[in-house]
Length: 156
Image (cartoon, rainbow, N blue to C red; front, side, top):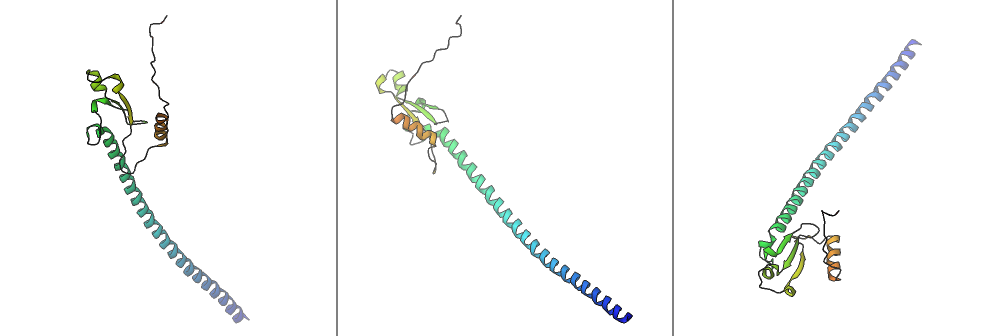
């Protein structure tokens, strides 16, 4: 009977050992699969990060070029006004041009020759913002006025 018990115990131990070895083999295979997937994800992440950095740099360059174009516009070809008549605002529009004001100030033009022009400088595919579109519409519809505000510091 002891041989049968020994064989039974040996069989059980063998089965347990085989199960353990197969489990480790399967888990090793699973581990390798996960490690490969992790490596692929890390590579994809590095690629996406480089692309995002490149896009960020390109966007930054475009913004800087646009800002430079805004500042230099009055002295560049295609700006059809005297630079001395242009006043830079930057936001919500880039320039207010008092067209003809320099000539008027020097006595070479009449008051009715003055023209007020709001200008926004765009480069590339840039478009007017919704706010700029609303300003253009207000001007086109005549919703423009001039006001004088007096500040009296010495009032009692």
